[in-house]
Amino acid sequence: MEESSFDLPWPGAGRQFLLRPEVTFLNHGSFGATPRPVFERYQAWQRELEGEPVEFLGRRIRELLAEARAPLAEDLHTNPNDLVYVPNITFAVNIVARSLNLQPGDEVLATNHEYGASDRTWRFNCSKKGAHYINQPIALPMTTVDDFIAQLWAGVTERTRVIFISHITSATALIFPVAEVCRRAREAGILTVIDAAHAPGQIDIHLDDLGADFYLANCHKWLCSPKGAGFLYARPDAQALLEPLVVSWGWESDIPSDSSFQDWFGWLGTDDPSAYLSVPAAIQFQQQHNWPAVRVECHRLAAWARERVADLTGMEHICPEDWFGQMCVLPLPTGTLDKLGTRLWDEYGIEIPHVRWNKSEFLRISIQAYNSVQDVERLLQALRLVLIAG
Image (cartoon, rainbow, N blue to C red):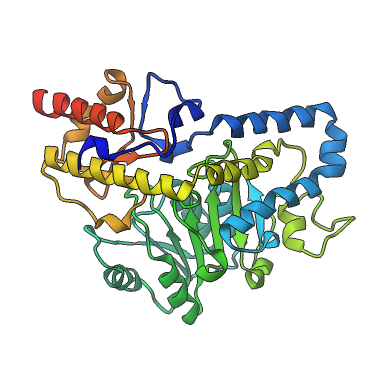
């Protein structure tokens, strides 16, 4: 594939973001990046809050949050009353893990690809209840849905009460077949909790069709909202299983709504909701710039980068091309990360995460609308100098 075959989805895409121009930013997956108009809307909400805090937080907040949930729910193909905003996915995982009535000997089944903070949350809460958190090995390379399901289901026992699984993994950037997992889990009477930190904005999501009991995600990654905006979705008949992580005015509310889920989790007290209220602006930004086409071009560039790095390292891919989206991992020979150290950042100004997973070493590359083939070429040049020239 020639460089000239790549086109930015719209002219001046890089200028739409606030990233420092001297940095080659290939790490959107960690904390995202917010477009200028979305950030400006975020600051406008902050100014409006400061203009009359009592009116904003005391009299308007419930209506404002409801208005901000509506476009998010539409984007996710679900009901706004089945969503609540949370600061981040770790907050949401804590809500679910602390709420579920696990008994001694019960098992929560996950994979060995899960995010470290989530692993820690489940281990902490399972240890308090005498339950067991199990990271079922899922081997690489991964090639078929049937193979994945077979490996995961080898860990299911009569004591399995919950399956916790990523929609898109952090360490290995794989898109897991969560719809099939949810279908099989429901047939077996097992609750499903989906870690979707990387999903909104990167892949299409139809929550009402997916079948998950709980779906937890960030908006400040691939949806490009300001930092500190995530959401917790709970299927209507699973909402009663949840208890508030923070007990506030919504518990035994003086003005209860028709949804205890919204009362208990919708607003916890004095904070800055501006990131939540800016999520509609992020969704609108992506709609205005034909984000489905953006995602296609970004995936093509990520796939091209994967091929070029493999040509350089001689390493095999961990999955077919349809198992990743705008983010993928680039396998490296053992010992490469020790050799690289911090040189990609210190010497070349390239922001890209180094990943050690299951005795394997990777670089994880993220391609967003502001990236270009020149960014990938800078990475390739740096890797040649470090790995070949030494």
